[in-house]
Image (cartoon, rainbow, N blue to C red; front, side, top):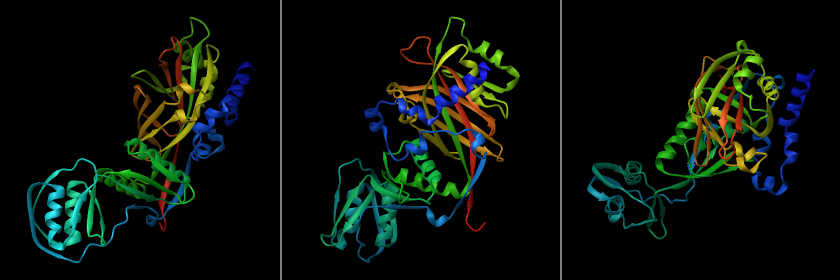
Amino acid sequence: MLKLKYFFFLSCLVSLCGYATMNTPDAVNFFDLEMPMRCGVRDFKEQELASTVVLNPQDFIVRIDAQSDPLPRYQVNSFSSRKQPVAVTIQNLLTEAGIQVKSEEGVYPVVSVKSLKGELSNVLEEIAQKTGVFYTYNSENKILTLTPKSQVVVQLPHNRQVMMAVIDAISGVRFAPIMADWELYQISLIVNREELNKLRQLMASFLKDRYLLLAQMNLYEMHPLNANSHWNQIISDFGASRFASSRAGLGGTLLVLKSGINVLQMVAKAMENYQVLPMAQGQMLVPSGWRVHFNLGECALNRPYEKLSVSLRSKIKDKKTSQNVLSIDTKPGEVAFFDFSNALDQEALVVGVPVPGKPNVELLLTLKFSYINLIKKGE
């Protein structure tokens, strides 16, 4: 009966009602439109292990947002330039058309090109892609302006899970901060050419790889109740046969439970030896094969964890298992790292992660997984 009480007490603590304990000014500072979907988890009894989203390829659009007039219709017969700054090279290309080239502040490369032919706009675009620059043209003033970065707008299907997965993947490759419009399902950000290419690859992956992995997390502080509190004893009492695998890593140990065993049962067992304090909960979506980054601290109940984040790269295999690389990070650097595989109905937990500045206090991170099928419309 005591175990049952622990379980229901823990379930209450980790539910969204726990956010009532947040200090109001802090909660306002953290709030954004993602939080209602981000900062909560549900038991698998309330959701299917797999769900399906139907996608239309035309719903994925990446466009450069800068306003630019069409270039004059000139035919380039043969254009060459050797080891010149890109602004000089493009100015030489455009001099005959009477166009002046200016450059916004930034670092620009030196380039060599040989015997370029074709429509002026196509030749200019070839040079721009080779050198990684962007440009805008003002036909009234006949001025072409070079920039090392440009703002782009990503139009996505009207699906919140797909949009959140894109946001997580963009954070995973450390793009610039983004602006998300949850009504229009658009993302706006400033990128260089390499990042623009990665964005386009990401959009294509939704129609190629066909899966999203949903990872749900709870974060706790573990305060030992006595000097004998130890995870080996907890695992022994819980039943070592109930675990599928363990993996020691940088900053702790990752334990994978056998199918059908709820990770909260393990947390309830730990409460017999530790004071278990819920710190945060949230979820992120992982396009198969992509590394995503989620600031779990945005959902924190406690200010010291506002800079804590989780990174995860997962590859879903045969709809049943995933191969994962997981790291837990703080602003100073990485605090835990694991490489592991699990069946999608196997829940996991990371134990023994030390808390900087708090002797004898550990972090506990629990993980639940499910996947989303991405089906192309008409299939």
